[in-house]
Length: 529
Image (cartoon, rainbow, N blue to C red; front, side, top):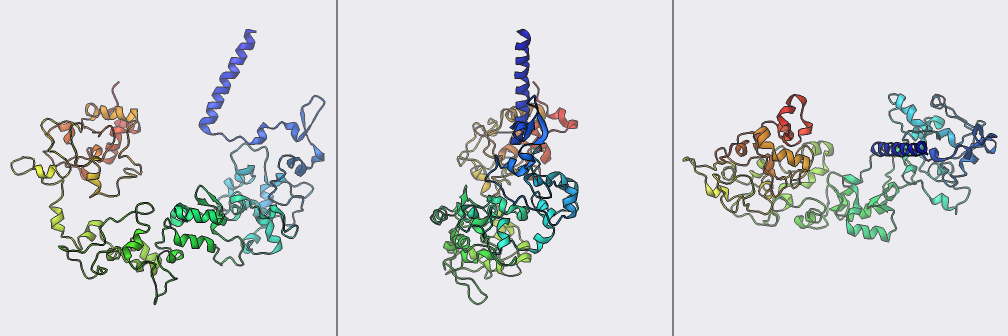
């Protein structure tokens, strides 16, 4: 009895170990592993499976016991052409005919789409077959280069079964004829094509277009179209434009489309297809036309006021006004997108009226540079006598902090509820994906990181301040001039590049991410228990 209980406990522990390992590694287990062997194989006198198959070895009939409605390729047909790839892959036939196991390895344990036989072959022959994928290599094994020369999208009889489940000449009213294989009807030929819906081509993010799409019964999944939502599935030549008119009509109305540098979307802004002699706009008011998308919901809003009349600022003649008012076209020249497309996009991606200037240099085309240089809040914070200039403090703080007594950010008051708002006015674009491609500002550190921050003065002699328990710009940067902050640990970084509190970017990262420290420097970043 004790032995039996002991075995049960061991089995339970083993199951836990394998279950946790499977969960951690996300091991893929094909469904065939859960099927008893005698479901396909005959059994002997003792009930054990033999090598002999049921149904007289008819593989197709065996598979169709479970897979009655999923046959994607005609079976039980003789292979006329056997390419060298067919021979190298050693694709099995049944009496010289195609079966399910010709393409599928049902005992495969690897994580491969539909247990296809092609993965291992491609793994060893990728250098000589760079353009083939799991699906297309199986097609080429029998059809050779025939597929490259053929357009399967025209309406010839023999082409239907490339995408549909039955041939059109069998039964035109068959529902299966109308059913596609989802995205996999396109995958065998187009697996290497990268869909552009996440690069400004998806009109269905716009709620107004979503409503229209529902009225048209368009196939959408999580606001994302499938291939045939946007592309024609029947057209005559490979060179023909395969974009559906339905998609274009919706895209031209959508606010989530990015029409810039895309010839397909001229009608997003123009009422008719523009020509060199005539290019009518949907709205003659430049600002209203741009702000239709650039309203912070679908695209970034204005970074400069528009619709105002310059008073003290003298705008150069090459920066045009509309009825004496600033517009988006004052700084941008949308026509640049129409000429020498690739070269122009590379040199001037924002189609500014003057290319090659930095953000600030472009601003100084109108604004007086010296005036703005005097307003740098990080400079001239101390007068000649070494006293803090209070007016400079009030650019960011609501009251002047006491540098002799204030330590940390707990008792510091800022002019804005979020201190980072003081920074991004002059330093836009760093709110997200910064630094190192990750958003840090506004994030509450984990317990591990928080412990490193709390012990930073003891470990490395540098304060890493948080504001209300969260990371802000000043956590890594010291915005003050040297001499303003009296505490040494809090004063570091005032003379450093980008005012980082530590000398090098890597050192700044390792101050918090101590587990990422190099072994040689690990002693400097070790938390004392």
